[in-house]
Image (cartoon, rainbow, N blue to C red; front, side, top):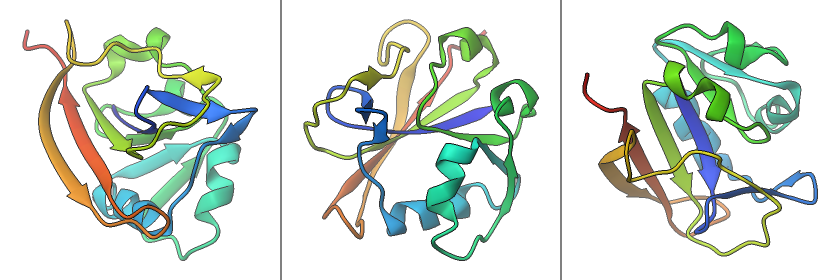
Length: 141
């Protein structure tokens, strides 16, 4: 599966049981990325996607990380990924380029071992001047 996460500069995902940030332009980009497949998420994440027209096939399920297929996309905001690391083929990080007081962080180690950054792109956001997309590929077997 291909996992999409939004992280701050220190790999934080949430603060006080809330997402750190949300961005209309980033939501559209995520839907564009997943347009040829399926975008899985839980109900917490889906709430922000209902603010705009949905341009891709979305599946909402609390067990989405268990149910997503190999080529499916999963948008993850409030779940640890360590238990699913062997099933993740690619990780797309949407970097806010900010320091937030996170109390829930990504539990994967980037740029060491399994995960190597293979692509990066800066995109304009609606709430953030610039959001950096980082694509990480798994180790070559």
